[in-house]
Image 1 (cartoon, helix red, strand yellow):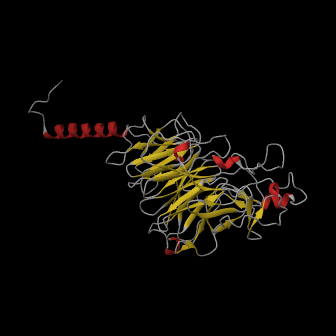
Image 2 (cartoon, rainbow, N blue to C red; image 1 turned 180 degrees about the vertical axis):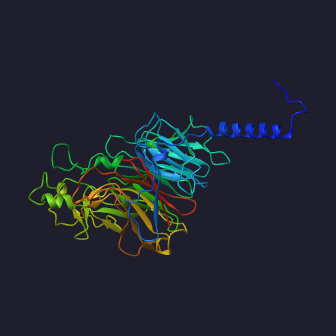
Image 3 (cartoon, rainbow, N blue to C red; image 1 turned 90 degrees about the horizontal axis):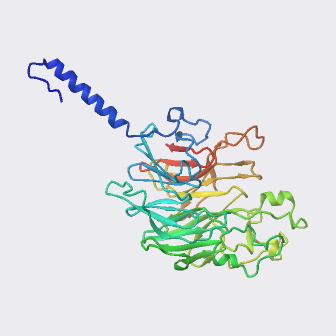
Length: 426
């Protein structure tokens, strides 16, 4: 290697040193990979939020984004329902105040929905189980190629198979196993399956131990039943209880036109929010909740006529929303950035649209006081669709799916249509 002799001038030595520093920085910067089309990302001003709030688009075109979680240092981890470039989980790191992503990382080959940081691990779900990655002292995944299996063999029949989950302080995992049968009918008829054998392995929420490896379905405990499909779940640490926003059934007028019109079928039943305790039964498939009558109505497959009530032993929802809005995530806000009215209230990401409202694809807010809803729900962030759903003129742009709270109290929303992540601040 050529050496510089002592007779080189000081300016020359300084110039060489600066050149070396510049080349070193360039080399270091090439180790980081920016998300696709980072330069094209701009604030999406079409999304409507209350006065005082603002929306930034953090990323886009990341694939079928489902649920997400944020680390203590602000890194965002998202699970995907379909592999993109052969990977399921994407991590967005070094996010600046301007919403720019400094580095992305992808890993895992099992697509799914749920993802959550908990006590030194990153937990994630596939469509049939839950696994985890151990974190180092900096909160980074130690080995992305070798996750530990927590549980596998959960029912996966292709429809409503998202295994969303939450955890409590005692490291219990509460995992949704949705029903692949929408109404509990025998195939090709309007006759109910009696007894409802579906409930033996689906249509409810099961618990497993977070720190026990290689569990199977038989190792779990059925925590609650009669819940058709609760993609949106959250553990409320103020009430120390589980909450779930549930997808309602459909298909009334097809086989029961004597009781239901097409309009009835489009506007029933309600999407429901429950506080759930062990051994609770929400009544599916025998009953559904009618938000117009404010009652549990006996399903036609079980002898109902659209008027008869039933299953008084089944729990009532704490809040009801219009039909077909498809709640896909639930978050209790505990940050200090938003105004006081939002403290401990619930945000709900709606993935569908309501024929009754002629609106959809929005994030709603439910105010809470003393652990219970303290008022009616309201639309918080609207127009993710990007079009007037009452008079559509083009395709829907975004469908909210996942919610997460950042370390400074910001609210993140991701969508599984445009593959975008939005940050809402106040």
